[in-house]
Image (cartoon, rainbow, N blue to C red; front, side):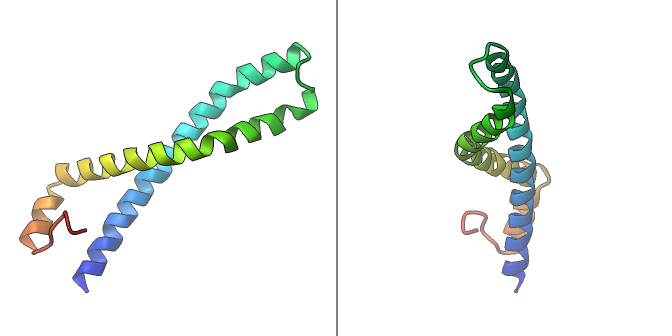
Length: 101
């Protein structure tokens, strides 16, 4: 029973870190694409009514890379937080191995 509680706690911490990192990186990458798309629209390479659609397609195209990158970063951040808060020590003293989780 305690094992399930600990797993839910770790999963919640990982999911929260991943969500924050994912949204932040997607926002940064989306904002970085806006000048390029608007520049193409002003040079008549892109119809003005397609600007939002192209931006959405670029967000979708970048999502697969961002998901993997932010998952890796979320794992590292979560392990760092657990280590900083001495929760790995508490898990070990309670009989749980961090490697097993």
